[in-house]
Amino acid sequence: MTKRTIVAMPGDGIGKIVLKEAIRVLDAAGFEAEYVHGDIGWEFWCKEGDPFPERTQKLLEQYKIGLFGAITSKPKDKAEAELAPGLRGKGHVYYSPIVSMRQKYDLDICQRPCKTFPGNPLNFIRRGFGGIIEEPVIDTMIFRQNTECLYGGVEWTNPSDKVYEALMTHKKFQENFAWCPRPELAVSTRIFTKKYTTRIVKAAFEYAKEKGFSTVTVCEKPNVIRETSGMMLKIAQEIAKNEYPGIKVQDTNIDAQMMWLTKNPEIYHVIVAGNMFGDIVSDGFAGLVGGLGFACSANIGPEIAVFEPTHGSAPKYAEFNPSIVNPIAMILSSCMMLEHLGENKKAKNIYDAVANVVQEGKVKTYDMMKLSGTPDAFSKGAANTQEMTDAIIENLK
Ligand code: NAI
Ligand code: MG
Image 1 (tube, rainbow, N blue to C red):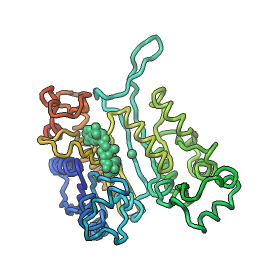
Image 2 (image 1 turned 135 degrees about the vertical axis):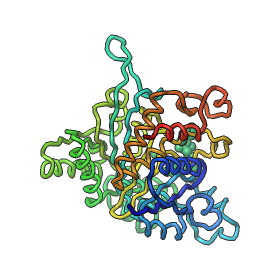
Image 3 (image 1 turned 90 degrees about the vertical axis):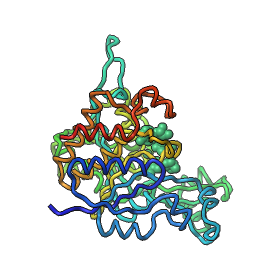
Image 4 (image 1 turned 30 degrees about the horizontal axis):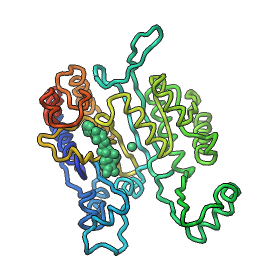
């Protein structure tokens, strides 16, 4: 088989730590690849005024597959203040490079699996009838539209005349917001398009069909957000009727869904949502199966795909030596990459190795022991990042 080239973009903070560990596991599992390094993140914003430099974009365009660690984003005033003095006042504006990447390359299908690993001390438990303790087995894939909605970046503070006039053409704006002085007005738009809404909904149905699940849940808020959430629900109903007659559409509101998370999460197997609600509901489900140390994801576009843990750069843990964080989320993200590349056997091998380590329970990072992330976690028995990776590698077949 030809050797693959993967663009490795560690980014900031613990991104640099966990990506290295994932590559160790991929190597040990016999995945033959070369990794080319891609600069990305805060360092390049500060030094170059661009957190997603063109040279990294070129690498992605050339090699099509990326592994991404995490980046640090800071508010507007901090971004300006930390920019190299020579670059200040030259019109550089900070945008999160991962959000830019998703938009630039149409990485519109975000998949976030949330699956219970038996034996994980972080698994959600609840009190059942008669006081028994139940540990529901969760197997949910969240399909999050990744490029539109509130993350589209179409927003204003103190909108211009044209924008303000356009807003004033809407009856609700006149009734509810015309009282507000314009400089005190902030507007973020929630834009959905039929093309991309259809793509994410179809991806969810395809997955349900492939895995034999009979329901796709649209998790939005169409009773209130009538245009955008309404569009997604309507598209899902049409797709179900015309293309997937055996699969039902279920419709939940994001707020109620978060409440149902702790009631009956095991009944949801395929959820589809817009960008914002998809982000929220996937973090909610991730919390039931181990939290950020376990939450992996794929960003898939028509040509390019990038795989990343959903956690951020956790700067407070970046300098720990030895490192304290859990590499599993990044390792599972690289499993998703293998599946995307058709390397299903290797993906399963790694997944099973993680499952064995978790089930055995001998090697646990601080988060799995519910300790606070301080160096004394090690003296209380927590494994460090490298030890967790070593244990996973030892469990490979
Ligand atoms: P975060 O995900 O970096 O960390 C939140 C907390 O989760 C940590 O303090 C730690 O307790 C825990 N945690 C995260 N990853 C872990 C791991 N692998 N093992 C064990 N525990 C882990 O989110 P936070 O603190 O809100 O943001 C930090 C920075 O990361 C910010 O600059 C933020 O903008 C950025 N961020 C980047 C993301 C990305 O690159 N896709 C996503 C989320 C945040
Ligand atoms: Mg999130």
